[in-house]
Image 1: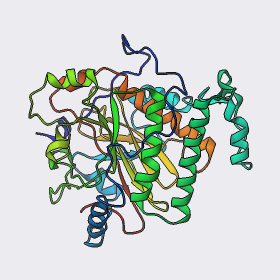
Image 2: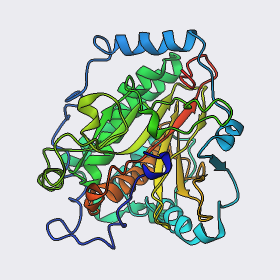
Image 3: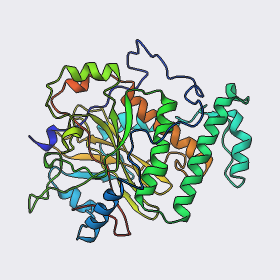
Image 4: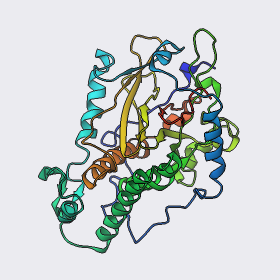
Length: 376
C-alpha cells in the first residue's frame, strides 16, 4: 500500500451537489432549544482524559521533537507548505474558488439582532460591514437568545483558557468542541460528528518517510470530523463495503472502521502552527484542514501536485476575516467558515466510500512549550 494511494476525496460544493431530501440547511435558530448537552459522546476532561494528558506530556518529555518544514519537504512523499504564492498554476482556479467561498461565508450570516450586543461585548472592536448581517433576523426570539448565550459561553471559556494559561486539553474540550458543535448545528450537516482522537496513532502506511532513514514521520491530531453511522445515508454507504475493511488511517480497531473527513490539530495559546492535509489526486478537488493555536484558527488547503509526482502542495494559512475566539466578530467569522467546511463534507455525495480505502490526512502543529508530539 503506497502512501500516495491513500488520500481523501472532497465532494463537490453544496451548490453543485444533488440534494433530494435536504435542499438547504435548517433556518438559523431552529438548531437551538436551550442549552444543548455538549458533553454527549465525549469523555470527561477531568477523569478519563487525564490519561491522555499524562500520555502526551510524558511523550513530550521523552525526547519527541518538532518536525521542520524542511524535513517534510524532503520526505517521501514530500509535503510542501506555500505561505504566499499559490502552489501550482493549474491549481490557481480551484484554490481561488475555495478561498473566495470562505471569505464570503459570513455574508448575511450574523443575525442583525446581535449588532448591539456585539458592540457592547467588544466596544473597541472594528466596525463590521453591513452585508455580514442578516436583517431578516433583527427581532428578539428565544432561539436567538439561546444562540447568543452559546456564543457568550464560548468567548468566556476561551478568555479563561488564555488568562489561566491552560493546556491544549482545556482548549480542545472547553473551546474547540463547543465551536465545532455550534458550527455543525448551524450548517445542518447531520452526517457528521466531531470526535476526539488525541490518543490515537496513525498507521505508518499513511505517513511520509524520512528519505535517509526511511522512518515514518509520526504525527497525531486532536480532533476530526467523523461520518455518523447513525445517519441513514452514511449507514447505506457503509453497508456496501466489506465489514472489516479499514475506512480510517487510525490504528485503533473501532476508529479504523469509522470514516473521518477533516483533521484538526489544537495547541494552547503561544504555540505555533504547521498545517498539512494531503488530498485526492484527481485535481482540482481540494482538501481543507484546520489548525488551532489558542484563540487563532487557521485554515489550509492542500492538493496533490499537478506535476504527476507524489508531492503534496499545501497553501495557507488563509486570512479569513480574523477568524477565532478572541471576540464576537472573529467567532462569527470562524463559525461561517466552519459551516462551509461542514457543508462540503456533510452535504456532498458519499460515493468516496466506494473507493478503495481513500482517507484524508494530516493536520499538524508544533508548540513552543515542550508540548509537541512530532517524532514521538
